[in-house]
Image (cartoon, rainbow, N blue to C red; front, side, top):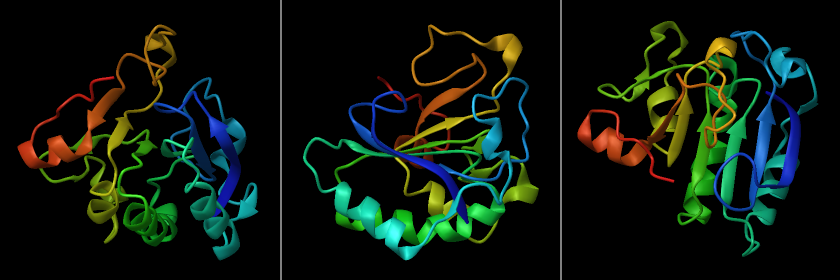
Length: 175
């Protein structure tokens, strides 16, 4: 997996000051995407153990509230395999630092996987179960609304993943 960039002190993509990892690769190709350069799976730099270790070390800082995953598309099948062990380690070391994930796919709250079943892998359900907040749904230019918090278009949902997986129905995250 490659990553496009890392924002070490990001306040736009989740609550508080966060580290935001922008992975490379996306097949959605949303009209007027804010990060079109990251559509290419080969864009950016390789996500190595050294990069993962640096993020893990920086997450220990008390002013860092958590980690956000964006893209590109974190839940592309090609990215899930690399992200799963990393996110599992983040959750193990920092259980009180929320993990947010932004995806253009849609969560099937009954299965805990993606509604786009051809994108599910053996990692999908386990990876999603590690997230605290999932912002799902493709960006739709015609539904763009700059008043929305932490999302770009009205079709996108801000989901409390843990409550949703327990209930089997979508539970909105309350900001």
